[in-house]
Length: 197
Image (cartoon, rainbow, N blue to C red; front, side, top):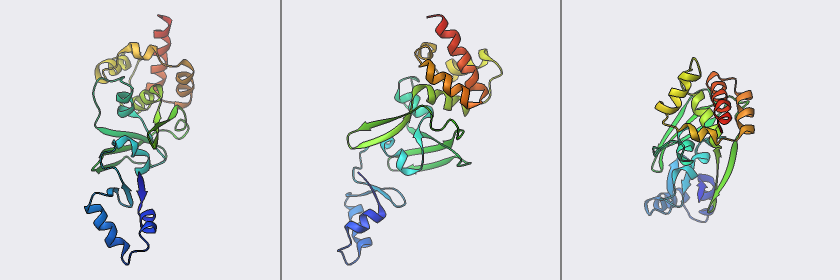
């Protein structure tokens, strides 16, 4: 369970020196520091369950979400999340793994996010459609559909069949709001692909 420094200090308030007691509890493995001021009681918890608590508001997206859904073949060992209006990319290296946070446009930020529960933890993650749109937004701009298709198939190693299974309403709404050349091209590719079904 995630605990803030102030929560722990309150719990240890009966001790003469709560900070010293916390230091001992950390040494004993009762609390594992995540970043300054935030601790976790389970040192073996998967990092993605902590991503939203490290920096926010944020939701898991980009490569991590694409891997989570099995859309890209590679296992991703960095927890990538989307933020908005932060202006620059943030990176945190912790004992739970590496975390990267990067902006998406504020208008599209709240779209295509689901809330997942795992045990006592909840986390926000992009839908597969949104995760791909976020990833393409962060890549170099393609000049046409053919070039974007190469980026999807060769660079990201995504099977085009995966795109055919996307939700049309989510794709349409995100493409309309994103104002991104790559996302607009993706929607055109998607429209062409579903006509083949």
